[in-house]
Image (cartoon, rainbow, N blue to C red; front, side):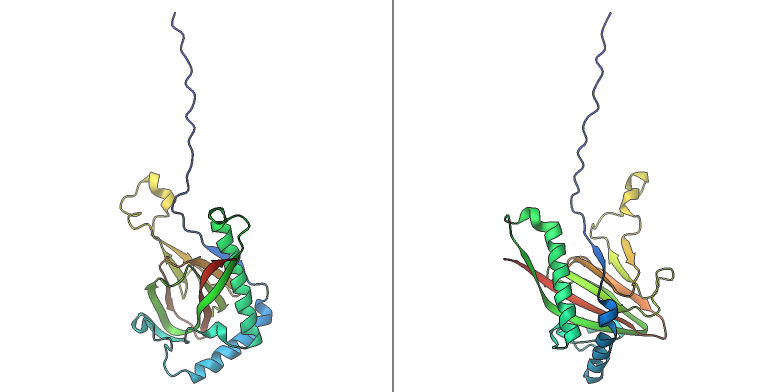
Length: 223
């Protein structure tokens, strides 16, 4: 009589390769900062020479005001506080995803190298783009106006960086999401942080109120 040996189940090791980390934070000081930041933004808007004062990708933007890329350099107490807060947030994010690759006891410092506001009015939008001159980016929803996820009104859309992720669909690819993008509902007081390579857009916004955000690009250094 032959004896049958039970086969052990193979061990399957999961490897999370090429994931795209995004982070969402409720800004604790939003209520304290909001009114002064909005007042300063509208004051700067009055002094703008062009609708898109940054002169970056002008044709990709419609019916919105964009400042020069130095907004968080203004010496206004609330602006200075916001810069301090977002640099701390970005440093924390960079540590979270990178620290195992850094020397032991390394400390991260984030520096805002570009920052600007968008005041988007009825019918305004910003085509898909990425930010190639930094490592981490963020959008602070100071006042999302009438933006909402249900109608895809004035939301930020992030595009799947896996170029061929949609070339075949069956139940085995359900985890990929199926649509090639992720829509983020702008919520007042939230900050969304994402890697600079990730393409994103602001879908057309329709509303009587302005949609106001502050965006920033950061680089990281170790100390």
